[in-house]
Length: 143
Image (cartoon, rainbow, N blue to C red; front, side, top):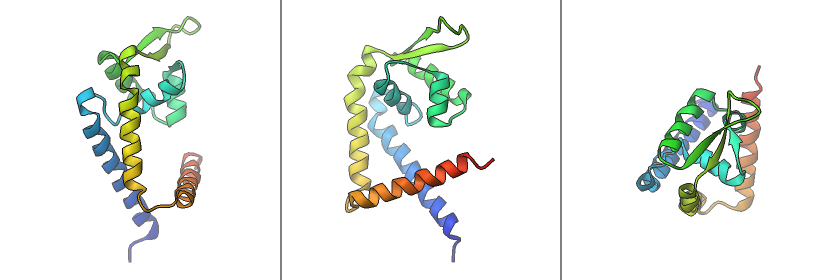
């Protein structure tokens, strides 16, 4: 019999990879990838953020964020504005182009959620979300 945690990790990994494939396909015509859309989501929710804010929100290293932010900027979805208080950092805001694609991104996410949660109750979804969050926080705070 497989180790329970190995099995758990395997299924989380499969779900994550399938989600990436799904989002990449759904947003392909927009040129937005699964590595990029998460930043747009947070920027839609907030007027502006810095790369440091995004690193703290997603627990992703700044180099990975820099690559995605640069790509989104090159595609015209965000603009970086020099931070007057800290010349080494930038304030990041969405552009009009990004605002026009907001509904497409949210629709793709809703479609995915509907697909994977079919026949799963709201109570079960809340429980799974709580468990994964608890385990993730333990993993982040293991030091």
